[in-house]
Image (tube, rainbow, N blue to C red; front, side):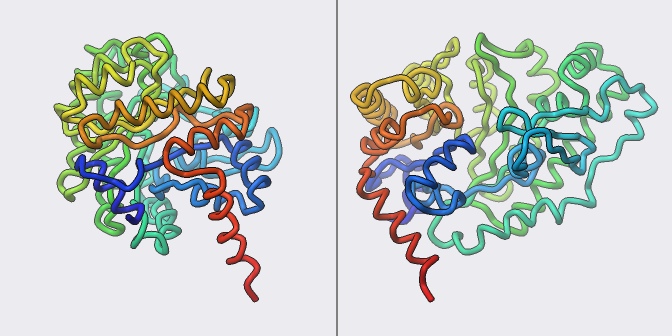
Length: 363
């Protein structure tokens, strides 16, 4: 099967030749694997069997797609958010609307003129469209994006008070995301629309579920509707414990949920599969806090095998992925152990890397 066929079959709960994979690595982990496999860092996903090729076109590109070489280097994105590299990641160093009043917030303009520029990231996937499952990531959609504009404290305060100017800005934020999503779907016809907001923490929801249902759910549905209008499955990413709103997400059209952080309350993968498996495909569940960095090879293989078997007990509906980006302290043998249970041995991965190297050495 091609990667595209494999993922589509899993979504339909049809037989696959192996479990589909969409794995994310910390940049330092990518560098470690690239050195080990002797390939360029951007080829690591292909060598490691990723079946999905996906690009950020929303604000997450500013966070993860722009890579600085040195600590402290900064950039400002087209939303006016300033980022700096600290601890190997881009982190926000300036929130454009933090502490601002009504007049300044009403005057804030969303970067509609930059949509063509943002979507050019999808051009890089042109050569992969035929064989790979193509994803278009428009996240963050609402809550997480508001936190990037205002800072979390101000964002939460405004959500609680709900002044008319803030509701207007919230709707303008959604209008921008809808325009971005619709243009992406029209021009690039991806295989799914990837959405998301980190609304969960280690102990549960970061905001009251009732507030989420009142303010965010109906607006998120408008973004989901864009995918549905284009005949696409809709995927949603949120870290943390979001068990209270999973039923709501299904109600507004969710098809794929990521990343299933099993250590958070209510997020046991097997319980979620039993309760929601008829409606949802799950992607994630391989623990990146305890199992991968600290478990033995035997433990990694056992847990991965159990995860694959039980999450596909109905014939499919599962994409193998970690519960977060795989951290650099993870032993490479544990990474290969996980892949072994997915049907890709270490030898197969090194063979794939060798084929990639040949492309770079041809005269």
